[in-house]
Each structure stands twice: as structure tokens, then as C-alpha cells.
Image (tube, rainbow, N blue to C red; front, side, top):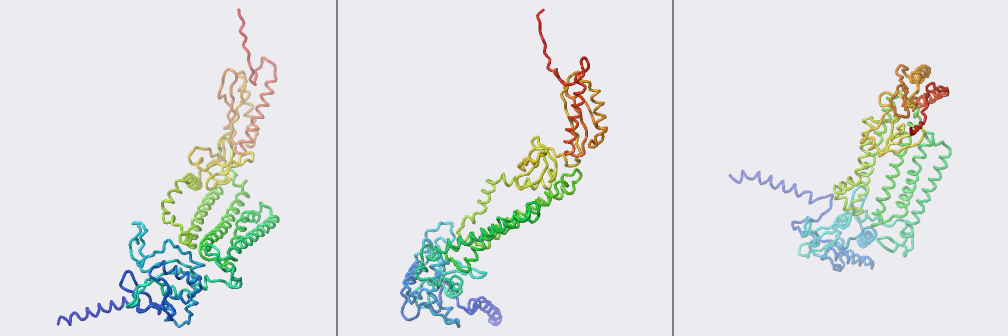
Length: 564
């Protein structure tokens, strides 16, 4: 009775076990290493070598396996080298593959493509890393699988892996895993010699240094020269094209902006094209050049896009300088200032996106061994502290643009100079003075210190002229003449606001100020000069009369002290 009740539970338990083991029994028709021991894969049979004689390689440790396999490959003893490969998946496939040829292909990959880290290869049967620090999770742990390298194959990364396997009644041995051996033909087709390399003499195909053959050492400088010539021809062609257009035109400005980025793209593109078709570098040289090649291409494309955007924006603002500086054109000044801020934000986002794409696409952390990327948080803090001034200026430029404290086209007074804002950059403002000079000012000055913005709300402003006149000057006569003048000058707004008054006095002279309102700073400066000229001329005419009438220009007085 009890057994009858437990039978369904037992059947369900057995069904779960069978479902869990099903993926291990069939994975795309291939058999994989499996077993319960943490130090070895237990397999039904080990299919290595040619089967004609016992293996003559040292397969007890990972280092022994690699060393003996590489020695056999150097001697072209492929029959002996086959003992290092587990052909289980190859034997079960329908493809007929020569085992010695497969060993030769794997040797080519190991010698020309893979940079073997001999210091990291354990020389223990259990592959335990006894040199690792206690913080390493694999320290003191026995292993049955080691990854020697990762190679790109299409859109995935294929490992070159060693496995410790044991067949029933046999001793555990280290071999190239059966999955790795099954991937060797595809990897060799990707990383093997090109048709051009096969045509070269045998001495040139021999290894020279750092997994590079002699022909690669000779061809690499030639490829760089070809790429440099392509870049030079591109530079000259664009320069010739620029001569047909004025730099102030839209096309001329864009050509000037993209001149260097296109030249860089021609250099990097030619280098990449020749490398992928003729010069197929391998090993560390490929891992080193691929990221830098990608950096050049991304930098060139990004530079072209940003330079074109910058040139078009500069063209739009420079062509509308007079309109932007018009007294009542607040709407356009607000628009172009916000567009300038958005352009800077887009630039920063594009730079971040380019860096992110570069890190993902190039696998720079693996190919160049940049372990420092693992501590990117600490590195970021160090860089942020070192560049805090620059980062502060960048944030200040965005703050200025959105707070509208200084807009493109605004008239401001900076360090006693009357200027117009021409450009708001990441770290600086470009100001144009009244005499067409350019002043470069840090943006932090406009956020941390006070400055005068003459066109923030109302472009009109009071213009004043101060004259040093004699204490006996008739101010009423000056005031009457100034009142008549302001009624006749068309640039003076609201003549009723015009004022003539004495603002200072000492023993030598008194200061008379003439004030009137102008429509905008540019008009106000012209009016300022005319008022000064007119009132000086009027005072000179009155001063030319003979004493004892009032004098107008200050005189130097001498006091004589005579003894009585």
C-alpha cells in the first residue's frame, strides 16, 4: 500500500533526473567532458594520437603538454604532436580530417596567433596555482580546465582550452579539449596564412620575433608608408578643393573643418584595408594594432562629424553677427545660446559613446591586458580630481548657456573693456572688443565673479561724458548748450532725461558730467564721442574771451608768498 502511494513520487523524481542529464548527453551531436571529480573529466574513451603507437608527449601537466607539443611542432613531427589533441568530436563527425594536418594547423595557431604566457602555465598535475595571492578565488584550487587564449571567430570568442581527462582504467592526462580541436579548422581558416603568404619563400615565412614572421617585419613598415601616402594624397586633394571655395562660404568652412579628420580616416582606412587583405598579422602584434587602428578610425569619423557641426554653427552665427548684436534681438540671442549649449552636450555624449563603443568593440581590456580597467572607479576619481578645474569650466559653460547670464551677441564689459560675446566654448568665452580684438576669457570668471551685461534686458543705457573745467566756469551756459544739442541729435533717446551737473570739485577744477540715453551700446559710444567733441568746442569758444569773463579750462595757479 505504501509502495503504491510512493510510486508516482519516485517516477517523478527519476523523470527530473533524466531531464537534467539530457543536455549533457547530447549537445549539438557532440560529446563533452563530464564527470563527478573536481580534478578530472571522466570520459568513456580518450581519442588522441593516431593510434599507431603510444603517445610520446609529456601529458602529466599543462606546461609539459604545451612544451612537448611545441617541440614536436618545431620538428614537424606531426605524428607525435597528435597525442596532444582529443579527437573525440572530430571522430564522431562525418567530416574526414587528417589528424596530422589538424595538429599542424593547431601548432600554427599556437605559434603565430596565440601569445603563450609561460609564467602562468602551472607545472603541476592538478594545475593548482600556488603563486596566486590569497585574494584570488582560484588560489590553492585544483583545476581540470585551463583557457590558454580567446580568439575572435565571427561574432563570438572561441577559447583555446586544455582539459584534464581520464578514461576508465587509465591515468589522468592533459590534452587540448575536444571542443577546441573541433574548432581548429575554422580558426585556421580565419588566422592561417593567406594566399599571398603561401606564395612567399619558406625563409621569409619563418618566425622572427614576437610571433611575427620575417616577411611581416618587412611588410609592416611598407604598409605604414602606403597608408601615409594615401593620407598625404587625401590632404593635398582636399587642399586643392578648398582653393575653389572661399573660407567664409558654407562649403569652404566645412572643407576646412574636415580637412585633418578626413586625412586621418584615409590613413587608418588604407592601413586597415591592406592589413585585412594582404598583411594578416597574428598574435600580440594583431592584438596591439587592432585597438589602435579602431581608435584612429573612430577618432576620424567622430572628428569629421563634430568638425562639420562646429563649422556650420560658426557659419550661421558669423553670418548673423549684426543681427545678433541688434538691440532688440533677444529671441535670436537666446536661441543661438541654447543651441550652443546643446551642441556641447551632444559633443560630450558622442565622445562618451565613442569611448564606450571602442572599449566594447576592441576588447581592449583583454587584448592589451589593461587590468587597470578593473579599477576604473579609482582611476576615475584620480582623473576627476586632476581635471576638476576643466570639469568645472565645462559645467560652468552649460550653466551660462541655460541661465542666459551671457548670450551670444550680448554686449558685456570685461576687465574694463566693452566686448560682444562671439562664442561660448567648453572652457572659455571668445569676446570681440569694439576695436575688433579677440579676448579669450575663462567661463569660470563669468560664473564666479560679477560682470556687466549691457543687453541682458534693455539694450539702452545712459552714456556720460565728464569734463574737468575751471571752478569759474558758467555751468548754466553749459547746461543750456547741452540741452539744445540733445534736441538735435537723433541718437539720443528721451532728451528729457539728459542731465548736466557738477559731480566733483577740488581746489584746481570741478568735474561737469553730461548724461544722455542711447538706444544701444554701439550707438552710445558714438554719441559719447560726439557729445565730448561738441561740449569741448563750446567751452573752448567761451574760454577764448578776455578776462574778467568766466574761464572754462582749468589753469595752473601760482601763489606767491612775499614777506611784509
